[in-house]
Image (cartoon, one colour):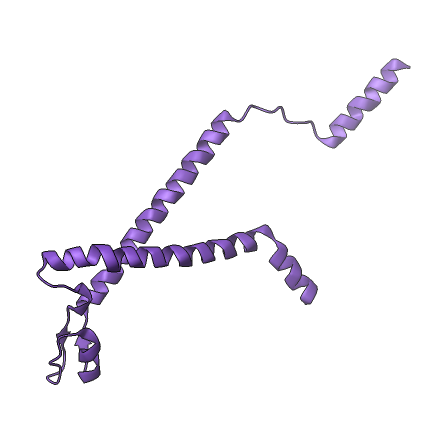
Length: 139
C-alpha cells in the first residue's frame, strides 16, 4: 500500500493539483483583501455606510447593536452585507480564473499553429518489413 501511495504521489497530475491548490489559496487571500480593503469600502461609501460588512437587520426583537459581531451575540441576524461581499469576492475570482484559462488556451492554440508538421513514423511492423525488403533487394 505504501508503494502504491508513493506511485500516486509521484504522478505529475497530483503534484500539479497540489501546486494549484496552494497558489489558489494564496490568490484567494489576495482577492479577499482586494474586495474587503479596497472595493467594499468604496461601495459602502457610495451607499452611505463605512463598513459594508455591517449591513444587516435583526430577525429578533433583541437585536439593537450597530455592528454585526455584537448583533450576532444578541440574536439571529440577516447579514446581507457580508453575503454581498462574499458574492463579489467569488465573481472577481471567477473572472480572473476565466481570463487565465482563456490566456492559456490562446497560447496552446498559437503553439499548435506554429508547430511544424512532423511526418508520422510508420508503425514498427511496417518499418521492419521495409528493412527486410531492402536487405533482400541488396542480395
